[in-house]
Length: 193
Image 1 (cartoon, rainbow, N blue to C red):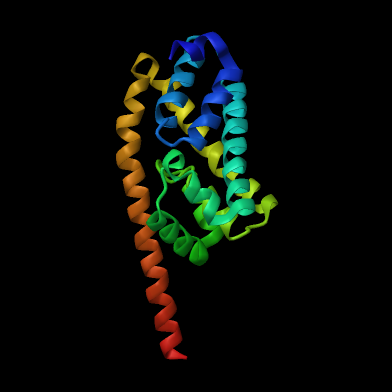
Image 2 (spheres, rainbow, N blue to C red; image 1 turned 135 degrees about the vertical axis):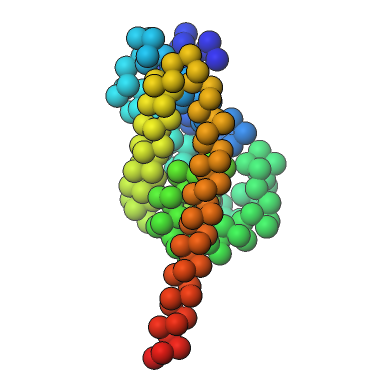
């Protein structure tokens, strides 16, 4: 990724934007590398976080707009590029209908779900200001954490990806258990009434 060192902040913003549009390009590699360059003095932490945040939000808004304006037909037309299936959309719609705002915020912190969360938000016509605020908050946390981890690990920045995968799985598991607990509590209260 010497292109990042050569291109600096504009390339960082562009790579993060592309990562949001094409999930196979992982932020778990791009952002820790930026952190490594922060440690080397080639970048500064705050500008790196801000430009990566710009790329994240811009990419998320593009997917949101595609989903909101074009609906399922447009998303499915680009399903190979976006790497989504009918089943993915059904699952995402179902989750989003139940948890909306929490899905957008927490989804920005889960590898693999980061980009996809924009699609059900757009399909269900979540207000764009609310979507943008939640996406900005979640992305700021994610980007700052990964850039900071890369900075802290120095030349071992590539180890961030091996840690993030299991953490992402743990977050998904905790979210699922929390959702299950919420449903059980809801039905218990309902049966008492």
